[in-house]
Length: 318
Image (cartoon, rainbow, N blue to C red; front, side, top):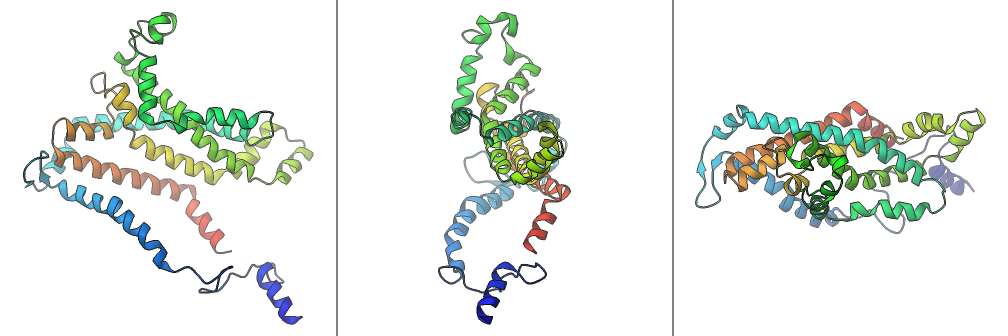
């Protein structure tokens, strides 16, 4: 009986309600702890296609190379050029504008759609499957389709002058940026809505029942229960949007090609044009390295400010 009681306490906790964590090296259900060798294929794959190219790009940033012949050592020439390049600051401004507008538009809509899809509405599954379709399509295919639909000569602008004016929406900086934001909203909102849908379904129903007893309506329940409970998912969604905004490329390449002029040329597109149009792979590598550093720093700052890492460590210490 004592053995059975002790075993039960190890699974459910001791008298003070504290859960006992299994000792390091303890066996798992169905066998012993998996060997670390199982992670070797994934680690090798990540090193070859993730870490190694990064080191190559960093090294290439110190060389002058046009894609042919032998790279010539250039020292810090391209790094000095990067600091004094006015096109860099303009591309950074475009990148921040697209990223911020994407967050402002996608977050509220995806949160509302996710909370709605987590309910028990009639035909909810059908509607969810329909609005999730855009995320299943290729980003390039989506850009090509919208480019055709918004063509000033044969698309919707030529038939709806009352809405699009002269129809040349890609010839104006404001309207071109608006198109990029809208296409991104149409494409990626389903993905973030799916994240919120899973998070809302994980919220205990007792919280809403208690709030209803206290007289809280649906709107107050949404702001006082739903949003705080999906905080971690909100952080994850924002991280995806920040990284996606910093690296957005295919839609700009197909829809605007950085135009009019360079008004929609973000940092990723500037990197592409430097490498594959100007054939300056050394300077393009500098832009790539800086872009990676900025994305990493922003991600770490967001996690730190939000307190997500502290919350995770507290949960792991239970």
